[in-house]
Image (cartoon, rainbow, N blue to C red):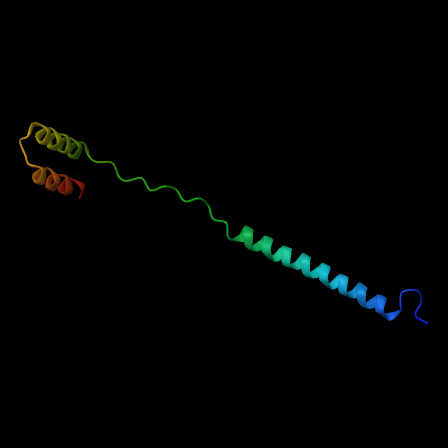
Length: 85
């Protein structure tokens, strides 16, 4: 005499739904903790150090000399590389 729904079969279905509900809640909790735990503060952009006034003046002089044709392209590029270091 199992009643209308079959007796013991009904209890098995209830336990299955409880188990599935708990599995969904636990999985959601784990995913939420992982998502919140892996967030990092945004990295600040790296600002290159400013050139000293002497270096800025040397770069300007180099550009002017190249523009006037006093030095070749190779000399200009070499001077630019040396001033960047």
